[in-house]
Structure formats: C-alpha cells, structure tokens
Length: 213
Image 1 (tube, rainbow, N blue to C red):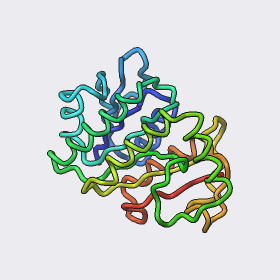
Image 2 (cartoon, one colour):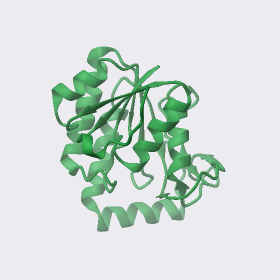
Image 3 (cartoon, rainbow, N blue to C red):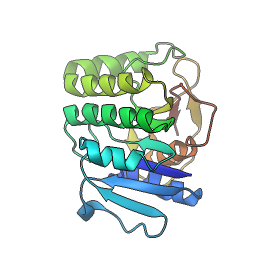
Image 4 (cartoon, one colour):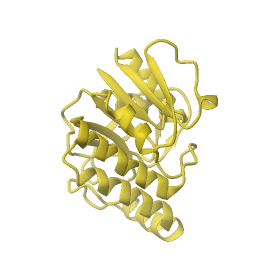
C-alpha cells in the first residue's frame, strides 16, 4: 500500500515512516524542507512543502491509498496552530475528493472526544491544565480532531498522554480511559509502531484508542 505521511520531518514521523517501510508499504513523506529529511532510501518519495499548500497536499494525497498525519501542537515540527488546523482541513478535503478513505492520526486525552472513555482523575486534571494553561494548544487539538471525526473517512486517532524518547518497550495498554489501566506515557517508537499498524488494522475504525507502556 502507498501511504502518505504528514509530519514526516519530526522524530515521531521518522519512526512512522521507518515502520511503514518495515511492513512493506511505500511511503510519500511530506516534509517542510529537504534539509530536514533523513536518508530513508528506497521506498520513500519525499515531497517538500507546507501542509497549508493546497497543491502540495493534493499532489501527495491523490497518489496515496492511506494517510497518516502525526502533526500536532507542541511537536518539534513547529508548525503554527492555525496552519495545523488548515492543513488538516486540506488533507481531509483532498482525501474526500480523491476517494482515499483511511486516515490515522494522533490526539490527546486533554480533548474529550471518545464516548467509550469514562472520566478519571488523570484525564480530568489533564484537560483542566491544558485548557487553562495552554488554551491555544487545546483549541488546535480540538479543531483538528473535529475536522477528522466529522468527516466520512475511516479514521483512527491514536491517543497518548506523553510521548517520550528511548528504546521500544512494547505497549502494555491499549484501550480507553476509565476501562483500561492506561498509563502516563509511551515511547515514541512504540507509538509510531502502533500508528503504522493501524493503516491496515480495522479494529479501531472511527475510534480513538489510548496507548501506554
């Protein structure tokens, strides 16, 4: 399968691309500029351009069979919040126009979006802190997720409280807050591997599983 990856220039994006290649996919990696592109080699086509450039997004999505979007506020890509929202809107519109149905993205439990969750002290605290101290990030997350979940796409949103560095440890928990013992963090490698696996997975279509080590 040919998979378009937006946010490929960041650490999480690198890991997602690497795992997609390991799984036998072809990848179109969208990066802001070629200077931030790692030497992936065969199997990866690199497209340089802004996620807010309609022509770039159309060109990438039109040749893909699935899309992974790992852009988000607070990530090392340093894409401004309004650009993240507009970029997500352009991606979703291009997917609808070209008949690309599978979308895998990332989300935060700071934004309430999953009816399968039950409130916990941890998620309530996270939402309160984010909304009070980082209202812009809260708005960006909310607007991005609303764009995706209100679409007709076959979407999956992978949620985690904190991504951290380090070697893969394997995800111990995958599920929903209040039902499963979801922890505070997961390694970027483990999140990326789970994200890449969702491209062909059907268990979590139109759902937002939370993950942790």
